Image (cartoon, rainbow, N blue to C red):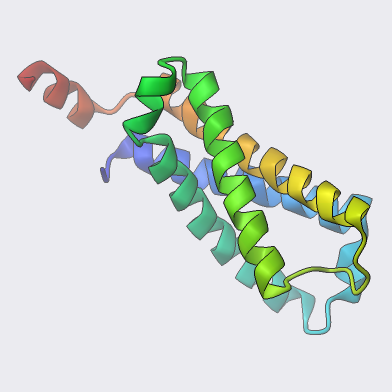
Length: 145
């Protein structure tokens, strides 16, 4: 598990999802203006959160369940993003974590779709790392089998 491919996928996936988050909430929607505590602290906690989300995306991507659905890494990445994105949306909705004080059906659906897109970006990065990052430990394991 702890090999070069894991670390690259984990860190690059977290950076990609964090960047998407920052662009969407910080630049497009300007939600950061509503944050009630110091922005550096908020962005630091968010970075830690995205490291955890990226770890989750990596672990879900690695599930053998996806091999039964498809061997295509891109398809696995999209299913991973859909699954993790929807689960995170459900958790944040139940806990009431949102930038908006108002609630509308449009906001609800848009938030759900954005979570899925954001985590799909992470899943695609993980798939890309699986294709392009060489890990000698994994090659040795494959030869032993």
